[in-house]
Image (cartoon, rainbow, N blue to C red; front, side, top):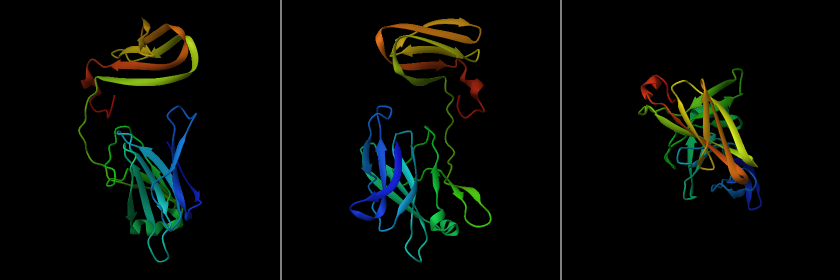
Length: 224
């Protein structure tokens, strides 16, 4: 996912463009991010949440005599764009040219499109006291101790043989798959060696399934 501001032939003010690729950056689909203003929009930063909904934070220049605005553009899984405009005296202190939001990313975040604002940081360079500020609201959730998790990697080079070494904690069990075929495994100490011979050369999706038999050992950690 990529977002940027730029000019558009049909509008005097700048707009936000959004592009996505589903093949590792080989091809891109680009569109205008569903919001048009009489004032320039810029300084955009993009993130997605656990539902793969898109959120773009940007600054919208204010009309003379008005407070600068933080603009949150969001796109849900159905491809519908919406926006949430935030006006705050806190931004007035920064000045309209100094609202430079940076979105945070965590695959466990879930937001409500049209209503929620993802956590943001701001680099404030106005005045004699430059600072980094946080804008958002943390809500305490329920901690779930994971006994199993999955990691996926893509190898964008065609090959018919793959060998992988993994170092792990003693009580962690790992199973590896290449293009959904389980790989052979040899273990020595805390190192596993996985190997597989494919029928023909191909790009590989490498998947590790990690199992922690006793999840209580993760207590006190956010995730494990």
